[in-house]
Length: 215
Image (tube, rainbow, N blue to C red):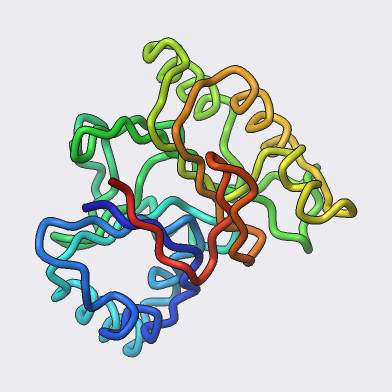
């Protein structure tokens, strides 16, 4: 089975048995950004990663707005479910921007990255997808004839972000995602940057602490 949850921010308590004890071997947990366990390579971080590497299920995440992007790029890029991902451990993978995966028969499109509230969009930031990554995303969507099963992003489409907070700042990535939303047929779209749990429609789901089951 596939499960979706929101930002974990390096908090090992998120992975406690009470919350995720029902996940079994062969299951996948997808995190919608700000994984937070690849940061400063501290003793605590190394210990926590070892704990996560012992989990019986796979831990997959898209990049958020707050990550150590330099460290993430140091991990090897490997083939993964008909796409590519960065391998953190045998059961932990960072899902690439603009990539398409086939997991348990579901076509899953991922586009991580975002803009921290404290940062100006004019600043060059590795937290935002590059033009090349956005072009790659478009190619993958077009190859599927604009039909996807699941979309996983950190940021929300612009119009959706404003539905939740009408005063929310909008960046170019939000606008790009809005275009994707209006030109793609999809079953579910999960995003996590807004740190609330709210189902806006049958298709659009803002996720934070809840754990959603696919299938």
